[in-house]
Length: 236
Image (tube, rainbow, N blue to C red; front, side, top):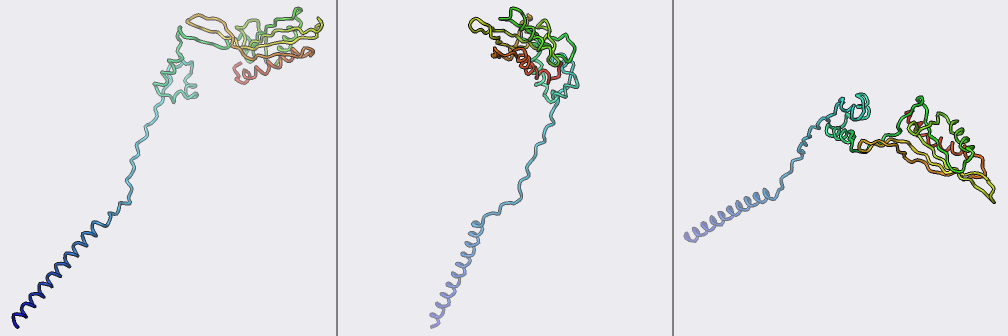
């Protein structure tokens, strides 16, 4: 009986020890799983953004060379914004406009000899005007325009007006006159050092009322409208 009792005691001790070991093992395994399963909480503090300092814009300065090349005074240099260019940009601009005898240069208008504040017009009339009466009417109508003076040479003019008169007949009887006209701007062209007078073409039109008496006044009205840009610039 004693031997049977000792065997039972040993069995109970072994069973308890095994249960204790199993419990400890399960506890350690749960702790390890919990550590690996729980995600790390990201930091809510944003990484500060480093702001790069903005470089101060560099400005160019007026020089006598700018005056000579661009014809811009020290005051106008700032007024037209040239001081905002970089040195390389200003040099490129000067190189582009620097006088070169091999380059094409156009100057308009050439010159004016009448008092400032006047617009100078060079007029030509050709065609069917044998008596010159129509040319006289056109000259008088244009001379009556505000601030307009007729000149004798294209080089003295700010605008030119060329008129060609056409006689209209019925059964060999004259019923009136029509006209074609063309305005222009006299200029001086310089190519490879050679200078010549040229003319930039402007308004082209016609007067078609042969039976009307307003040919000269119609031409004067057209020219008055054509001269508005010159009046607005205030250069004369």
